[in-house]
Image 1 (cartoon, rainbow, N blue to C red):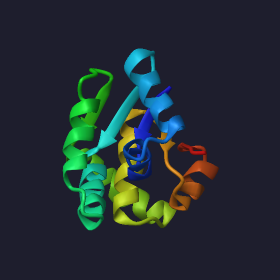
Image 2 (tube, rainbow, N blue to C red):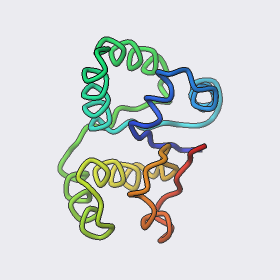
Image 3 (cartoon, rainbow, N blue to C red):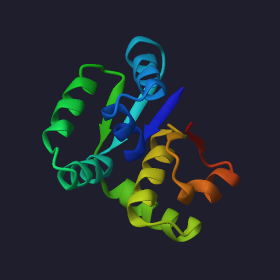
Length: 132
């Protein structure tokens, strides 16, 4: 499976959610792949600073990057252009449109998220939301 991580998934990892850990292990030890849009890291840092736990992000990212099957996707011109289109096409916020564009460009269209903003893109078969 080719996954794209939304912030929700990384928060689930931090909180020790069993399903999230199972997916992470499936990526690290199995055949699955994971892309993490860099904007997800921005959003995660913001959330962890708000909760008074900023060091958690560094620890999590270091633990994930031990695997060559996990990629941090930088925001480049291609993703930015696609994100602008996705934001208008699916009427979603900037961060979510950037995550969606990254998923589509990397062809990792199973997004680990419970975010309702992706519903229209899912309905139009652009992505599949994976949540529990």
